[in-house]
Length: 551
Image (tube, rainbow, N blue to C red; front, top):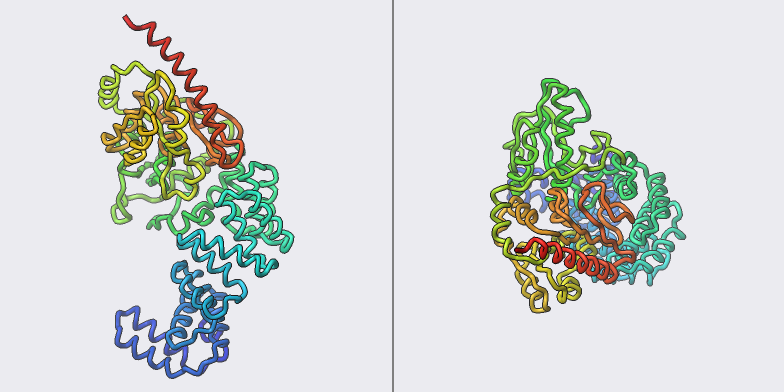
């Protein structure tokens, strides 16, 4: 790393010395000393703004954006409000991940010079990254390209903004324009690939994803996006390496990977060693990927090693009962301070990569999770008097999931299509959704809510195991129901989670699942019409079957 003195432009003597001492005093908790050094820097009030901005840019270039922020904030406190400095401060703040604070700096610049180049684009980016008002961010991008149709970055960002508004035609037009302006821009190629993916134009999406990776092969986001496309197409051997880039390539996972005091396992011999496998991301991911634990454990034990598995408390009993016999130890939750003695760590969702699973070996042969027999028997007894077809419903995933607006079907559509079905009783599989249940009942849906009894996934699994069918969107319920071998109908949006692949109505992951797919982005009605027709037929067959066994 370069010394700060090597990047000093036209600055008065001692300016950075004062700034450095102020930062050191702050880090040491010496507030009075920090104030003295900042006051000393204030005597350099006649410093030229362009010199400050030049140094800020150079500090970012040499990998020290935090010093750039310090410099910009100090200049702001000294009264510098030139748009060029505030724009630079906003950029520096974004470079350190402080997106919400960056919006403040950008707004200061906007108040002074609304026509400053790239300002609306960067402000929109900071708003989006800080989970701010997406409507405002969208409007800023539209204003940016209207004011300057040659602003490439605004067109690139507008692609994703229009995608999020389900405006695929507009997103495609923005992507084409960005590529016209900058045909060699990797970000433009990547974003255009995402639009084509939403539009189910898979071969074209693949082509632009490949282009993005060739233009910028070190970009983890582009490699990850290409890997997801490969996995969606069932090209597992090609897709797993890209999936390994998720910790840097997936926006929601950046900075989320735990830092362990032991190295990641990369295939080294485990003779006499202990491997720590940890559950990652969401409940559904753990339920889906845990079936590979026995395969890994067999390899570890064959080498003379041990395997310890850690996951979420809510799934602990279910996983231990089903797969605990394969591992040497199981722990739940906890931080690094409670890490058991081990030599290597490994994330659960990397097991297919480590095991080199492909299209032939990924196929599941049956359920791998077993519900609690006592809980299951209790639910069977409680539901035994109900002769109708018993169907569990899940209509939304996590409300905070970035794609939930796409994958959510909503109780409203279920009620509209299912309310007049005879010989079917519906059970909510959505804990904490009492308001939705009440509204669905008011709309005429015969919906029973017993979710107050679902303390853990063990309880949910036992209940699902007692039903005749589960109808669900892509959420943890789908993975749980499929993993215990329940008949499961999964309703999928046009650009689904990669395990569901493309076009097929079955799943190599869950033999008892049937997949109902959107064929047009955001259009659920044809999907619900098909599901309703199939459900009516299943209910009629169930009625005939139950009548035959009645005394």
